[in-house]
Length: 378
Ligand SMILES: *Cc1c(COP(=O)(O)O)cnc(C)c1O
Image (cartoon, rainbow, N blue to C red; front, top):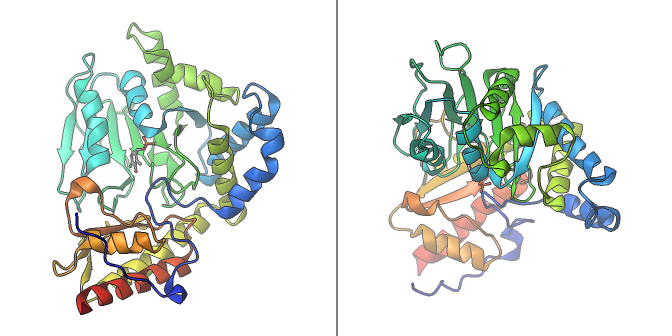
């Protein structure tokens, strides 16, 4: 690799906070300060005692409030992040055959889990090219439809609706890892809305959280009581039983729980999902407007309806090397604007999560313009 050109971005152009990564993503300094203040009585204390259990109950309540969950929905959680949840769902939510909409790296991964499971039929997979999104189609024999609210690898966000004509009793499971808290949706259209808190929830990784409907709770109970072998750490019934007691099956990262609570309570106190989704929408407006007006940048997602408000993917003209732009930004403290590695495009990818301030997105566009100006002048 060639050395990063020595370009210094003038200080008055730089954002106040230079974190634009899609996960782990910017953690609000207020949350870190609050954690430091509570650390002496919280960090390093037993997760089976009331202090931590109370924090877990705040997390579960905050999710209920944030998503205005319908009656009967429960919030459950466990360790291992979304990737572990895919395995847990493969064991404990898919009865025989699932359908997956795949349109990027993350949506493909859950499909791969169910395809490899020896106790399940091969899944039905409906794919579309990166930058677009497929539509779910009701199919005989499908007991779980696997959707992705926001495909983080490509910057495509999809509307969340139950497939028309899906059999009663079939479940809709939505990977909302990069969407939860940043995109509006109707929880009644979902049976399992699952995510990890290192993206819109501005916390750290390692935890999975799921909002689960009565139909999905029934499925979890039934599959766990059947004759399928389920490893305990991936057993959703065990996760459910512990969650109802405001605890996890094994030790969680206490800081992660705290930071997620802090972010969700901040959102809820400021008006809920409308507030946080509004912040992301404003960030998206700035980013896409800049790209559309730029002579060298273009939004990768051509259909404006599918363009994500939480993750922007911006193609650069071939005369400008995006990896060099990202590297120069990084050297100036503006980090993680690199495109998703496997997508292989000349692209910048920028998180627009609710914790990120609009002025900083504005400043980022000015920084990119400055860097590209310097690169093309030399
Ligand atoms: C980040 C991400 C994941 C992976 O989450 P982990 O917690 O790292 O397992 C899965 N799905 C989507 C849509 C993501 O953005």
